Image (cartoon, rainbow, N blue to C red; front, side, top):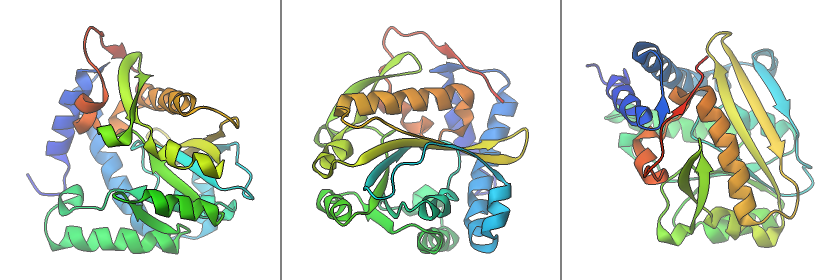
Length: 266
């Protein structure tokens, strides 16, 4: 296999997905999985070389935008390909940092090209409207300082939870699961607006799609995670091959005594 063709990753993701969600054609599933990975990489360059007008022609937007006068915690998933979302956030007054684990070579591939690509993505984030990454590991104070300054933060919760990340039980695709709650807890004192969004790719029409909804004020941490889990469930039911975390699904789902769920593919 050529490195970078995503075939081994697609094979492993398919095996993990089948334990959770009933699927149709294996060939079609893997084809869409690999295609999305290439689209994500292409978008790294397209965000830097295409105009605002070009992007708006290629994105369908369904959004309840939060008040830009308040700091916002924007929660999304490792689903779809959304490198392009930063320009839209910036244009709506949401000047946001991105909470992320510090990237490793294995995340993007092997060799010098992978390192160069990772550096390009990091540089490109700021060019297209992001404040840049806030790397995990002692990031709580930096997140709080950013919000105190009126900035917003984008984070992802569909990750394995260690004890220090305060995992809470949720339901995803009618299955028991757990998600980390610490990021939500960390920003409570800032009393931010909280929104959940997803960035999809419509395989049939070749268009990007942004869905964003602002949650009601005053929700508990458990309620926020429940809303996040509901949104993730909808995404996975719509296009499970677009989730980049199937390799971690065993640490997110609690598989005991739960049958598989059916899914609808585009």
